[in-house]
Image (cartoon, rainbow, N blue to C red; front, side, top):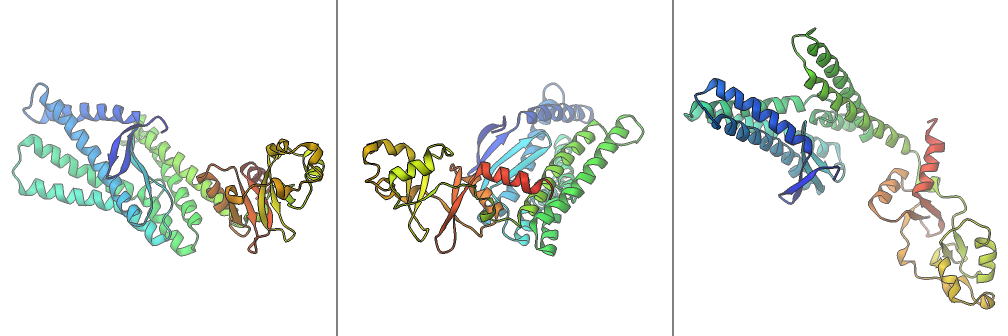
Length: 371
């Protein structure tokens, strides 16, 4: 899965680690271990071991944050495909978008709420229990980082949780989820560029803050926010098109009372090399499927005596879609199944033609390039 390593399952959710995580884990262990060596009386391997444990607990907090999103999504009937740890934290990949802006808001806010709860809990532990100095430092650090995690993620730009909150708000206000993503994506791009500029100025000591890591975070925000905004803009343009708009020209439809001889002469010889044809009756409704590879099963000398109906097979293999279904939904249907095509039918069952992945691509190239 994109080079990620699967390490198990969390509450039935596949759990992955990106190789970049090990690099960050090493840096954090060295940093935390060094601080503990300086601030405590620990010697030998102990500060570094405690630094490793602190780093792992920090990432456990990130996982808890992502589980917050995941549990709310699952409660809405949304599949959580995976949780992944990587260089910039964690990511819960959901199977689909929430059905309403209110539900989308709840999924987005759940992660930061978990981080705030952990901050409050760790703060209470720190203030109510007498701990050795080394553990005080660890608990204090974890509490602080959980607070930072919650605040940072509430920046109102994608791909952060605050961006998803903004998306839900705009979605609620406009009734258009794509508009919400576009707005949140643009804000995310703004914060991305801001972080890059601050990071560059900080790296060259022009500003007292900012570093190369700030540049990396800004690049991460910029790239992901831009991708989200472009995708949402594309989907928004698709809304005015339907399945009937992208039907392939010269779709392979024949009447089932046609003789095999006439079928071959008119639809096979010198024509587009369709491997199967949709057979319809006089009313235009689907009655079967004729596979060209089945033609040799009947001697050519008898093709005048047999019709398409004699050779066609059942329609069980045919996947249909109504002609009024939005093209965006058709694309999602094709992405979720192995078939490369769908049969477009009217409400009364009349077959209009095939809609294929390649045909949709050609349609979009000719209709959206100037849109």
